[in-house]
Length: 112
Length: 283
Image (cartoon, rainbow over all chains, first blue to last red; front, side):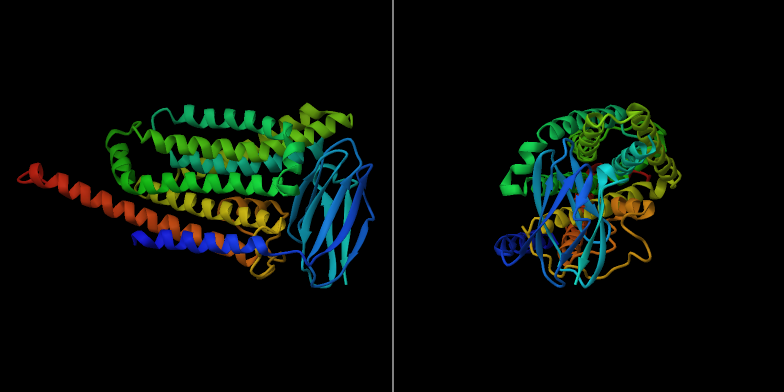
């Protein structure tokens, strides 16, 4: 019993480190935040592909790029940009928003 | 005002649920109010510091600073909960017996209490830093009723957390610490899974299957019950394989650690009981 823990930890650690080599073959897409609105409000990305998404915030206040339809949660500081990886997603429409300005900061990923 | 209150409420709720479970798990411990209050205060100071260094954090680790920081905070909390759970496994039975006998405060291990103080502080720090950034932005935008919204959100979130705490206190004392310990283990496993989610977003660990299933139709991540389930038991409507692995590994580690500690405590008690225990009436 004593060693079960350390074995599990070792497995976890080795998987975590092997993951450092992952990635690279992803396409880049950009969203711009201005006046607490996303531009474009509909962003087209390919299905079943992991994409690198850059969110540029031109507003003087921070925003959080977030979605409940796909895993994404990242703060974008004022006059700054942030990148995150999205997908791979099946074809369809996926809603995203800006957590700090929900009345206006709304958009959709069109995955096709 | 309501938009502000709602966002603050959601962030406060997440921290409040964690604080409630910790508060219940330390029931009957002497000076625990001081530990929990201290943890919240430290967390608030930490939240301001994190928000203040958010620009630096965003640029760190070639843009993955936020994810690495969040995952680090979450995994640190997992470790500390783990420490407490293992400690409780060797002392919990003794603790609940003392409480039943005296009906009053007992002394718990100082190291274990410091760990839980840190868990409270980290929970408040993580959710609080988002509130600070949000309010900073709102103030820059000249939003009305900022303080009213903040107060309503904090009070409502804390009230729901308190309701959970009051509910937990109704668990019979005999099963109380097994129940709160089990809740702490699930909480830790959920935090580990959330850490994995951040690391996947930054492409630091592989997903091992991006979406094992989608139970959004049953319980959506964005809904209030979904959010509560996310904090308490690590629920995710669309979990990745790596999240499941982190979840399962934490469960296994804490469970085996607790079993090991219980075995050791049992052996120590038996050894101590032998010499002077002979001829004494059983208690």
